[in-house]
Length: 316
Image (cartoon, rainbow, N blue to C red; front, side, top):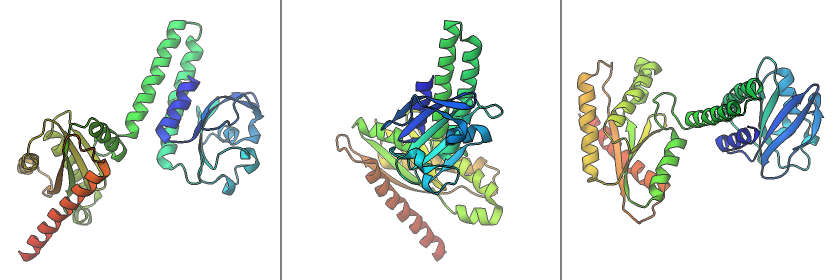
């Protein structure tokens, strides 16, 4: 379980190291680690002498962007290690039994998203520890609980690549899925999509209506492509759709988007009409084009369409 937790912590946060810290009375034991260089595996230290103990005693997580500028930390503890920033979360809130630490070799390595992911991982770990304690004498029960931890890790991983508002892939998730498709070399179409006039909607009706418009756009995009295609929200009012082979002409995808959009607007009781600008590029089989290049090309085409709409509206 300790190995799974450390591996999951590094994978989810992209950190340079992770430790599993277990409480033993007034001391703590670094029972396991997964890091680019040795940290403190095997050491036992008083809880008052380490940040992992501080997190447990104060029953709160720690996000430190610079260990030399954080009065909760003793920089001398990190001498000889790569650690320059960190996140530490206690395992169990009321009576912490341990802590999970993740560490970066650079200042400003972690962010609030990393902190939230680690809190969720600590919650899943707490449940696993309790279950292992209860059923530890039964080998089949231990295997079952390890499977539950694997599932919890998978659930947390899913959360880390999912956009909360729309349920689509977020930027990280889209990039991962899209790059996997491109690596196959079979060709694809990439559409960069922007919701028209979102700022005006937010200013006129409020952000709740703007959020509804974003969610509506996600629903339209989901309904007009195949289940095997990749749909993601890149952030704000921007979406991307990657259509896998076999491919139709780019205009077919554009027409499909327009048809579904028109259908939605006819049936929708929303306060404002949903409108989008689209840029579509095609990656030919075997060309090995990068995702960033395709995104840049599609973004330019989308901006040209948006500008054309703006000019047309100003003339009228």
